[in-house]
Image: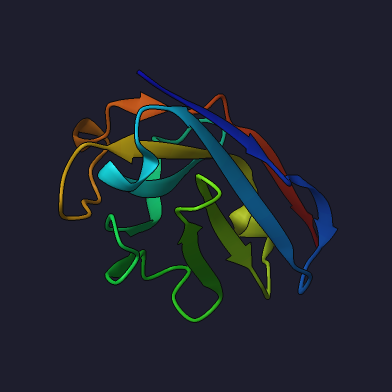
Length: 124
């Protein structure tokens, strides 16, 4: 089992920044690829960003490329999502997820463990 707890969400004006954190506990954190997903009301959960076990390979959704940065600190069992130049359409509940895979994937079915989510609201 891996337990994931997100933090760092909140209300921010358009153009602002937030940094989400996801603290992991349980099994060896460095054995898992990690991802951030988001879900807006009435919409399906969508991939935002992900990285492999070492953090050397990252993937981003086109909608956040150049604005968001995912990173991990395996010594602290934590994955981060730095979000800059936020837009109202970034408003959603953000979830971190862990996958017991070597590579990073964009599909929810690849991820076995999920956090409870943290709300991000961007006002215009």
